[in-house]
Image (cartoon, rainbow, N blue to C red):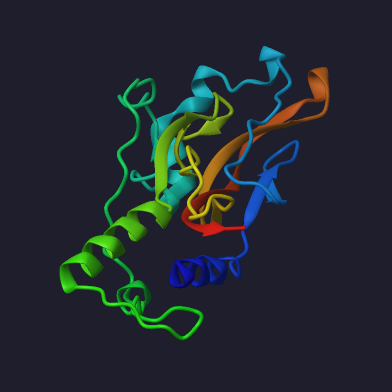
Length: 207
């Protein structure tokens, strides 16, 4: 029990990186994933059909187009009712080296190889914080419209005893095109501009 507590306390040293939306685009914040952007509902601010040329927008986005994290068309998984699959990752080396034979009070405990292996597997599964990816609709004013967003597993505590939770510690940034309008009525000018969108890429058990 002492070794478990020590391991989980060490995890408290990790912080969390985060970002959220401003009026126009995501910017640094304390929370990921990015909350939904509150848009002006006026359809006059939406791109027209001629503004949504896939060929022209692909040219604008260039090498930033990442089919692994963005989609032009509605992904089949967007409205899937099945829960996202938990990724299976190898046990980290520091956990494999965890000494289960010593207690905080100097006493030694006998632990067989089979029991040790099973316990470490259980501990890894219990404290592991996978990133769960789901598709999100950003709306017609973003291109591509759909993004594969990361979330930290949060259905239960990741510590034993309970109290800690999975939190984001790393993120990656993807570039999208954002439809942006300035001015009013006849003087209004709209165009596509590149904006960066942060996506959770790693979660850890943290205080």
